[in-house]
Image 1 (cartoon, rainbow, N blue to C red):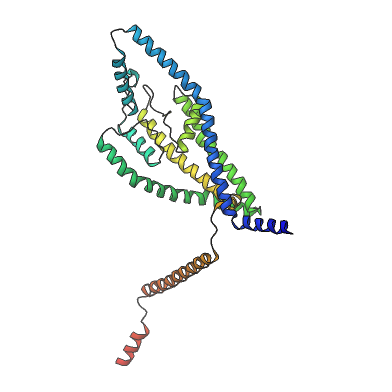
Image 2 (image 1 turned 90 degrees about the horizontal axis):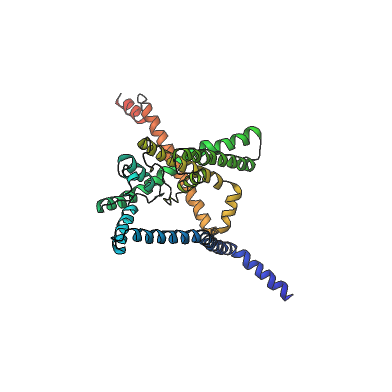
Length: 335
């Protein structure tokens, strides 16, 4: 008897705080996923870093042995300056001296990476004025970009997702949930093909040092706005049509970001995902729901009355030759 009562009370306690339990498991799962990524990246990349460090030490030792007139502090001072300039996107190599980082097309590409929060980091402002302007430009431009992308994605989603799903549901009588799932999968496949596989093949041809995997890696890192900056197109030696190439990449990044957001919005509108997301949300109280409904009804009623008043005013303005009753009464009294 006591065991059954204790079990039922535990069940009621879990059901009452189900959202909090789900949120706690979500936080725990996210932290474990972070630790998992750190373990995998460390185990995979640490040996390559160790080999590279050993190779650089051997190369430095050999260079000092071949050039005895140069001391180690002088070499380190020179290398430090070179690396500092390289962090700002300026290279001392002879095969990279022909590319400017701040011509118009490169600056346009930089502005697009800043506003989309991709930020490759291969080119950064050098002057204090440029850094200050970058802060002001980003503070205004990033919310502006979010507003722009939200408006574009909303309009595109209506024509690409909602209307096709509704058409197949009404015209052919298929289940709306099933049509939405099939449509989301097809849209995701088309987007991956048009903005990942095909551009990766193009980049692997246009960029001399990139294979298909590296090109696909660049496409994913860019359109997911991670922007690590280890691969940046158009920075090769004697790149043909570099200005036009940079403008094309800027358009590709903008269109690809819109396509990614449309696909994400399409999947988020699926009934199954909506139901899954609600497991982690805080449930609203009944009083809050009633207040929200009353406010919505009041706003709807006020908007209806405003629309009715506006229609009456429009009718009066559209009928200028119709005499009002008060005017007719005044006229008859005068006679």
